[in-house]
Amino acid sequence: MLLFGPPGCGKGTQASRLAQWLEIPAISTGDMLRAEIAAMTPLGVQADKVISKGQLMDDLLVGRMLMMRLSTDECKGGFLLDGYPRTVAQAKSLSHFLTQSGQEEPLVLHLDVPATLLVRRMSARRSCPKCSRIYNLLNSPPANKGRCDDDGAALIQREDDRDSVIELRLKEYEKWTRPVLAYYEQGNYCKIDGNQPPTEVFAQIQQLVTTHRERTTCK
Image (cartoon, rainbow, N blue to C red; front, side, top):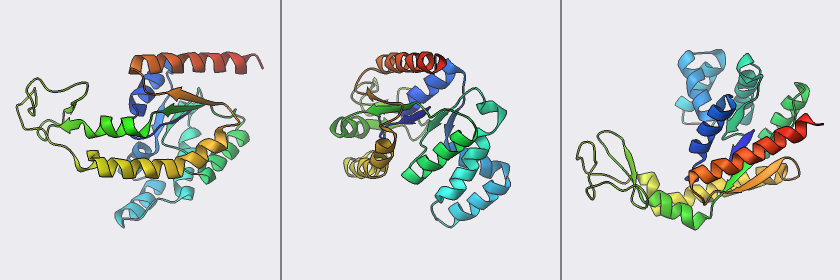
């Protein structure tokens, strides 16, 4: 499965729940890169050289690293990709890998949330500089205004949670992701209303996954 959604849509929460429910690995390319670098694998060493120079990882290197991970026993029963593919070239490379390895085309889950709502959600986030606890002024504010419930430290707003930065991140997401979603729209593509409570979003995802599994089993 592939999980798409703009920053602040709750994608991380749904990825974690899906992985636990289906007992499959949820693979984030960012986490994967960090693990490869920490383990000093050949590809990790190569990636570290690129990142340490402040350069962006190219499609080929990220793809090689991911395909190696997807070829392990851990992924034989299925997997969930979070944050990949980011480009149409990566999507085509993934499709080629799945075909070559005898696997079906992925189920694509797209969490759709209006940009105006995402800006409101993300700009309302506050964090404790001492314990790193996150609050949201809209739905989970601290008991004492502007202070952390755990240690009393003054809460801060991170730079990447400011309106102008959020709007830029959403524009970049739209620019890169829209062509990828268009690539998958003729396949097993499902758009989900992400402007619902997390439990309702997950219930809808569960229904879609169950229906997809029943349909593919009967083929």
